[in-house]
Length: 64
Image (cartoon, rainbow, N blue to C red; front, side, top):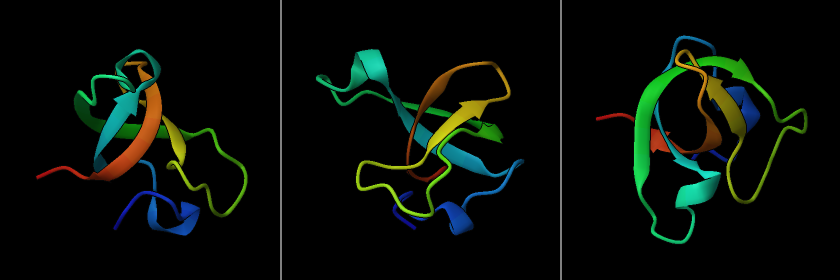
């Protein structure tokens, strides 16, 4: 799972995201999906989500 297909991501899923401010450094953040923010079924840089702690970023893959 590469985080580009909306159908693969559901609320409650443990994922790794990249925050906007971390795009240059590549630092990843782990968390649980609360909301899906990207409406299109596919996004080349990853589906944008909001984590349960409120952080927003693009999914890079599954946690673990």
